[in-house]
Amino acid sequence: MEYIEFAGPPGTGKTTILKKLLKSKEKCLSLDEVYADSMKNFIQKNKGYLSSRKFSSYLLKSGLFFLEHKKSLYLTKMYLDQWVSMV
Amino acid sequence: MGINGLMIVLYEKRFPGSLKAFEEYANKYNDSSRTKKVLERFNRVIEKYMVTELNYSEDKYILVDEGFVQRGSWASLPPQISKEPLEEDIQSYCDNILVPDKLFLFSADSETCNKRMEKRRKNRPAGYESLASSEFKNILKKWDESLEIISDILSSKGCEVIKIDSEQSIGKVKTQCESKI
Image 1 (cartoon, chains in turn red, green):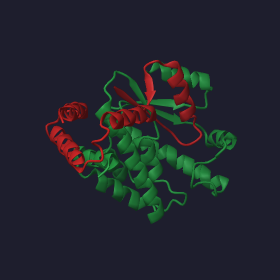
Image 2 (cartoon, rainbow over the protein chains, first blue to last red):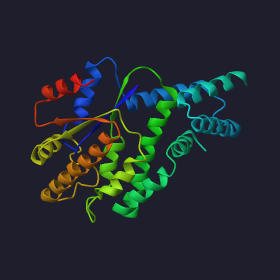
Image 3 (cartoon, each protein chain N blue to C red):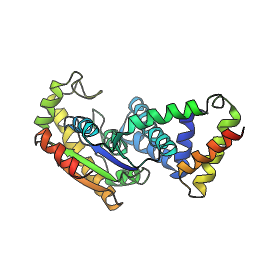
Image 4 (cartoon, helix red, strand yellow):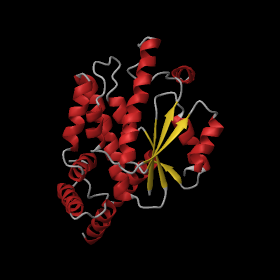
């Protein structure tokens, strides 16, 4: 995954070009799009647990544990999914 | 605590002191009502990046509009500029953001920018609507300068900065960007 940011004063055409690249380049996705999909999947997958205070606390602890041990957030997510499947 | 709050906490863990640094940066250049807006937008960017990192691992190029770079320059440019953005403040801001792999840095003459904005439904970005044309041109100039500083700092942190002259036609700009992806 590679992040490419578009920056410039308003009126320089950033958004126009970004939209064109999304159409023409197969491997390009917008952060907004990925974010929306990720949230949707995350909520669907963990339905029923998200309102639980225990879950929030677990998510925070596991996230912090992995960050402290310099693991990626993706690993944190995998660990979290495993935990959810065991409950 | 909701998911959004958790993402902010995780970000702070990854970049200790970042939230305080963002707040100081926002406070220094804005009045209290704009500071609130600036911080909300920083949090939104944090949330988007963190949720994406947490849930997504495919080999793709993620194109970011209004990310940390853009927000960082915008944050120091209120409609009524009272302080010039200081390089040391921008440096501190850049020490607390996720550095993009690549930065497409767009620039164009302020006349061109103005003409393009006039064609839009919403014209200028929110907050700058009531400025006189000369004042707004000054904002655009400062915006360019601030982005130049940010891009130099990010370049020293390993980000590949690609400067785009957007006076060129859309087709040419698109081709230039495509060649870098």
